[in-house]
Structure formats: C-alpha cells, structure tokens
Amino acid sequence: MNGGTKWVFLILLVTLAGRADEATQPSQTIDLLSAPLEETFEEFTYPVEPSEGRIASPWQHSPGAGLAVSETAIGFLRTREAFHDFHLVCEYRWLERTFGPRADRARDAGLIFHLSEAHSREANLRPARFEAQISEGATGDLIAVSSVTHPSSLRARVDRNTPPRWSADAKLRVFDETDQPLARIGWSRKSIPWIDRRGFRGESDLANPVGEWNRIEIIAQGASVELRINGELVNAASHLSRKAGAIGLRANLAAFEVRRLELHPLGQFTDSWQAESRSTDMGYSVTGESLLPRRFPLSPEESASLWEIDGDYRIELVAAEPLVADPVDLTWDHRGNLLVAEMRDYPLPTAEGAAFLSRIRRLVDDDGDGRYDRSEPWAENLDHVQGLLPFRDGIIATSRTEVLYLADLDGDGRAEVREPLFRTNPIQRHYPPIHERCLFH
Image (tube, rainbow, N blue to C red; front, side, top):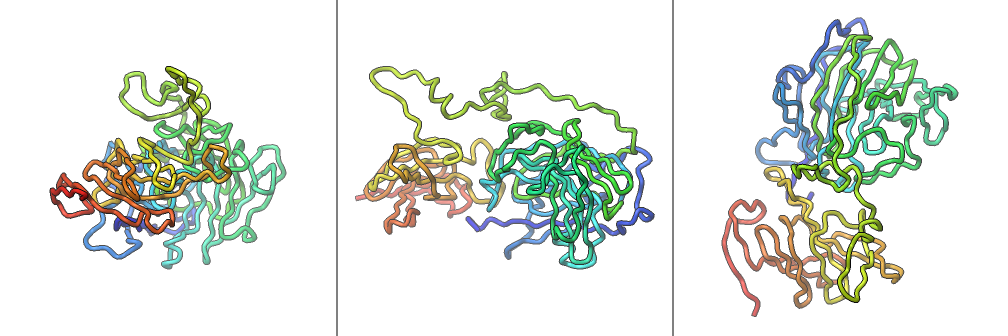
C-alpha cells in the first residue's frame, strides 16, 4: 500500500440473537447517535497490515454532532441490541474523498438490518444480513448476504432477471441459496448497465450527488420490507428469512457523514422529505462558501464551447474526466508523452499519517486522432502537486513542500526516479524534516 497507509477493517459484534422474541420493537423514537458510540455499538478494529501503535478509528462521533466516516474505513458498525418491526431513518451525504482500490470507483456504503448473530470469525468478517445499498447510481438496491451458517433469502417482484430490478407490478421471484452468497435486487429506476465509476449517476437517480443530503428509509414489518429514497418507494421484498437482528452501517473506502440515524415505531414517522436548496450549476454556492455540491457540471463539450479565444487560434478538446481528475498543470516529456498534474488533496488535507493524494498521470493517444484514449499513473503520493516543467530526461514538479526531479528512464510508463531538489516545511510526513537546496550542474 502506498506511503505506508493503513487500512482499518472495523466490525461491531451483536450480542443478541436475531429472533423476534429476543429483539426489541421500538415503542418510541430511538436515536442511535444520541449516546457515545461505544454505548450503542461495540467496536473491534483490525489493521489489514501490521502497524506500530494505535490506529485512529475511522468512525468519528460526538453526541449531537452526527457521525463522520473517513475514506480509510472498510467494515461495519453493528448495534449491541437487536430490533424487529421498525421504521429506520438515515440521513447521509457523501464527502469528496475515496481511497485505495476504490479511489476511482463509485462511492459505496450500506444501511444494514436484520444482521445475524455472529459465532465465528468468518461470520464476523462477512455477517449474514440484509442491506439497503448506498452507492452512486445504486442507492436503494436491496441486498441479501449469506454466511456459511446463516443463509439469507427473500422474495421480490422484478421486471428482469439479469440484473434483477424491482417493479411493483412484476412477477414474484425467489432469491435463496442458489444466489449465494449475495443476492441483489436493483432499485426501480436503476440505470442498466450500472458503471462502477467514481461520480457515476444514472439518468433517473433519486439520490442527490456528492455534498448534498439524502434520506434512506427501511420499513421492516414481519417478514416484509420496503425501501424509500428521498421519500419515494424504490424497492420491496417479502418472505425474508429473518425478521429481526442488529442495525448497522457498512463503509467501503469512501468518506461520508450521517446526521440522522433513528428507529421509529411503525406508522408513527410522518416527516416528509424536503429537498434542500440547490447549488448553482457552476459547482459552487451563490455565496462562494463551498465547492460542493456539484449538481450540474457542464459537459466537456459545453465547457469548451464557452471559451472565448483572442486572435487566430482555436481550442480543441483532447482529454476530460474520467481520464483526468482535478488537473492543475500539464507538460510533455522528451518522449512526447502528455503528463497531467492532479492535485486531488486540495482543498482538504489528508488524515494524519495517510499517503498524499496528488499524482501525475500519463495520457496515451492510441489511435493518433488527437484525443487521448487512456491514462496511467506516472507518479503518485505527491503533496499538493502544483506545476510541471520538462527537464532533461524527465520533468521538474513543484508541490507544497518539495521541488522534485521525476524521470522514467526505463520507459515502462512510470517514474522510477524521484529526487528532491528542494524541501521545506517540517510538517512533511513522508520525508525527514529538513530544509535543503540542491542544484543540477
């Protein structure tokens, strides 16, 4: 893993069985975030790789302030207590950061219910459960996950078999052990195909994009369940194999916040969903307070058409997202490769001890038509990279704390030479705190 970054796998173990006669049915509103986290949840953390010292929990919570989940979290939160027959309400919003193998993938998490009691390490790592998925383009999918000892099954009405998607008027289908270990029912208007790509949005998405609040509701009654996204019914199932269990949250290397996580008695939750005031279509608020959310970004073609060129010149589109993200500068090296600096760690700094997020990508035009077809990492883990300049057999890159000479001398498409020419600022985490200057001769 880059830069010695530690991933944390977090699990909370439920101590009550998943049977309805041993679970609690809410008789009044239960705010699962009102008490200190350890009182409502039991937490166990497992570093994926050996580490020295204690790793800070990626789940940060203070009563009255909600729950913040960092991009380094992968795992589950599980209540100590089991519940049955309830109306579960969760309000969340995505933050900017993603991490590790999912850095360029769709932001993903989940609201879990009817978790089975765990009796083994295997069951702890992959507990049997039902889940309302929270994922870009797939928020509202209903998932049944089985373990070796606890199969999960249900029945749902789906308008198609591959992949199945819920429809209230469709034929009822059984999802059982033949779909092990995971069965998924897509939400009613899910875009097919769904693409596992950071920032993906379907044409009919109900969930709001990054930076905007959403509400997801789970209404569990007996062996049936309904899912609602921002007030609209999007999924349902019956004949669930479990009628009770713990409540939980799943995190998967994408940062998000939760401001509301409540259990209500059935039939007593009456709050209608009110969409918040939208941002402008240029990616920032009218007051300029925030760069998020970005609800209506211009397409690359629309953006290019708005440029006004002075003189006998023209502007041509050669690359756009997802080939590049957060570009701040570009240059060509001695081989003619286009190198693009991506300052992905601005404006939010990385967590203490985490790898830097800035990088340089090499863009490749495979067919020679003047528009780049693919991009590859050329140099990574840079601290707020800001500028690029060709020099000798490589480039000089400026960052917040260094001036670097980077070069790909063996021609494999990645810079194996990384020489600091100038360093400053003792807060630098990945190099000794020095202040030096070196000059080429």
